[in-house]
Length: 498
Image 1: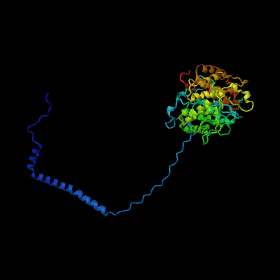
Image 2: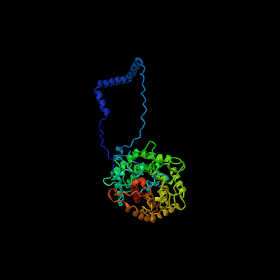
Image 3: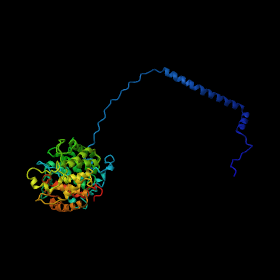
Image 4: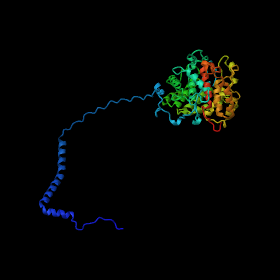
């Protein structure tokens, strides 16, 4: 097919032919146009040179002036950055912002606990039973907590938390010896020692956190908020929670540091991070160099009771992303080994030693052969130190010792030890299998069936155990609520346990 082309007129005249014809008819027009072109070219050549000369002359004639002095502005040092303080409004505000929340990678919205001792003076060893929900070095250790509904299917937990909520002071504290001021009608009995208000308040707070309540959610979120604020206000500039009013003040601090780590993590309030971190820092500074913990800071004396408390506080801090010295946990592991006999028994300050008792008839009323409190605490902490009972014979032996002393609510024999039952429940839940099944059956009889259901006592437990007269009814109720939360507080840390 031929290419397409436009038609061409061969007879058409060119543009040049037309212009030449017009110029022949108008010669003067061509001369005029030529003259104009010449003039324009001369102007184009001459004007820049003349303008340049005029500018140079103007510059040469202008007077030279000194530049005005420059005043340097006064340098004002920047204001030092002030760490934002946690205020009531900050903590009460339910809005979650990116800058206010904890890294999502460290938070499990369904997450879900742990210390003993007995000591050798007439003050209360607050480590006994004061525990809550820490996490271990394995982030998978958190289980599904209660959903903030009072224990879900575990009905005894709901009335226990209700009793605690009714006996909380307006400022957030639980008054160990004056809690009954909230009763109408017949007053509850069972006062504790007021020197341990920080410890029992932290323990009660952990019971609410363990059931899924936080400062942001849950039916008891206001109870949690008030308790957190009160504990925060008890922290001094060194990071210690509460005064050093008793020889064993470190127990109260440890449980409060533990509770604050949990409140920070579960509630996702970034403003609580420095409060929790200072609590952990104080605890780490208290530790003996190359050793563990006891009453006084860095005095070279160690005991299993305080050390287990410290392990749980540091484990919680580590889980929620706080700065923790890993060497401290390694040293604690070495110390536990030094206190553990071949038969699995864990001693108080050395292998073979029994739990301590107060002076007087305390040991007579509560015989040490009725409990394995420190063995239970040590066994549970071993799980959070990453140890496996399939590899540690002493862990299997320890579980056998616990099963030989199942919980029995027998006031006359002195066998009631709420702290022991608490730690053993968490330890044997981790062991799983028949060990947990057998323990849980005994726990149901000893704890669930002995909860008070009458009047102002409803939901509480009588403080008739080893440390009940020191912690009081708030202590016994909080720790037994935590004991029942063992059913869902943690996932099992060792694969294959069931």
